[in-house]
Image (tube, rainbow, N blue to C red; front, side, top):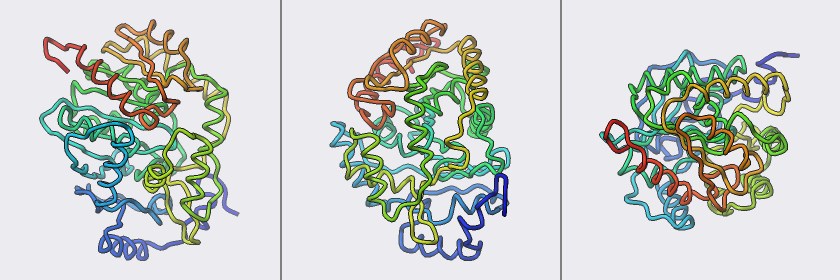
Length: 369
């Protein structure tokens, strides 16, 4: 019996490399390849192994027409008017020996904003926010390690320090400087850890429903949902499960959103894209180390920082936002109504109001962000 980080991978994804290539070729011809629907700019190939095959096999996504329809319906449901409907460019880049996927929404020449998703999510959680901001900002969204269409860590290394090192490599590769960094939950913790050392490179930092202190009852609830590793027979089964977890969502929109975060296994069942092997493990020592790391980073963040709290979040409370803001050298916080922990999904319009107000109020060397 196999043990260690690769345990179960042979059963999980027995598809050989040649079959993967043939499947991808058929998807591209049919317009259902997970990367091909958007303009792509691949990086040099990465050495492939079973670990990467697990993340790649059975990937599905929306076709360009479906993606556009989804954005139209999602924006109308959220009460947003998009300035124009242009799909992002999909890119892959090799960082520190791993392959990462990101979306570039444009517009080049505008001030850059980099978005980091939460645990169990992916770049598409920011679709509406990026589509709404694309004429004002050069929006980028990164799939962090083990999530979305980025590679799983072969060693199951998902430490905050490793995420921060990935972010550092990504920022260097794209040549980002004086940019706005927005992170939600896991992405916010990683953004804060990185900003503790590199905030001089930031124009501003935005932390969405996260800080050094979070509520264990809320995080355990999320962990129970995201660590559920039972494959299901259909996408609709995942929709039902997700609606039971977060009833704020529209079922039609949720189904399409989930197609960005699901893969179909060789046996026909459906499973999450993100790496679940490490999820559900409770390590109080690791939590305390992260807590201390983040408080240490807070003391070093020199850029203007906005802390966003979902008004109905059971993960991050008013007291947590207030305490974090007081500890920041230039911090403020705002509460977005009608939103739980996943603020950008529950109330993207409310989050956009908070973001625009913050960025319009912040000046950097006499230049408006």
